[in-house]
Image 1 (cartoon, helix red, strand yellow):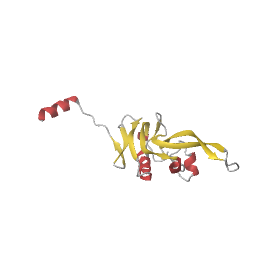
Image 2: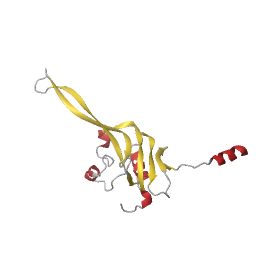
Image 3: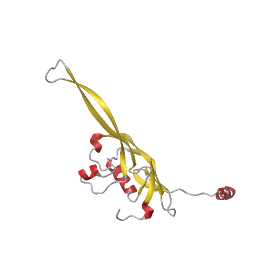
Length: 161
């Protein structure tokens, strides 16, 4: 990938849930539908994304009056699709994480009336890079880094207070 370094290469895990869920009409042309960019390419998006929707499908049975014979009913089956989560394209595998924050922010901006809860863990493959989490705080995609606290620091701080 252009513009990436080995430090961007990471294992991504986790789920960010979306409340309320999004129905097919709201996501059917989104670049976040697939892992390989096929749908994104079809809809004119140029860059593949590092996040995707976790899709659900169910078969729904519908009964309608028959137009030819109003006294009879016609049964149809439809597939209902929706999403209630965003997941890494490469869940549990190594992948470039260089656009992860931008991808999540783009999704949050696209659905401002929805709540995004949870996080994506980013574990860099390069040992000199820090592990971090991606989450949404007040409508913003945010990187959160862990803080190391030594037990002796806790004891020293308690003694000072």
